[in-house]
Length: 171
Image (cartoon, rainbow, N blue to C red; front, side):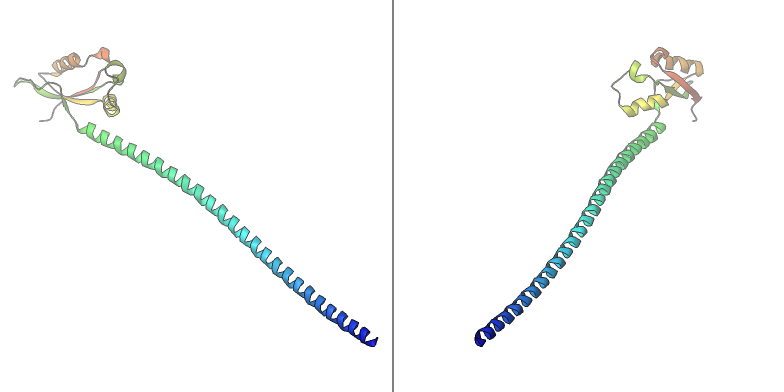
């Protein structure tokens, strides 16, 4: 009987030892799982931060592209206006090249703010703008009155044409 008790005690000790080892392994496994979950949560937080930053950067990039496009369009418009202004200011149109030896050359600036409504609605925008600002014409005539008569015959006031200035051409 003693052998049975001894065997029972050895079995109980072995069982207790096995149980303690199993509990130890369960604790180690639980600790590993907790560490893995903590690492996973940290990784999730890092990914979320990176996603928020990426989204913010994406929004900034889209806004920057819009600003760039708007600036390019504005620059193109400005360059076009500068080209148009530069070209118009230097041009002199010749009203009539027939003249006598006694005729003098006169520079006449003629404008028409309502050119599109009264004369030609299909004219391109730079040309319409040049009529609004005034175009310079070389007109031949004996005196200022004759020049006014020629200009009025070609560009009548009822159609909206206005003489802004008349001055003798410097030879």
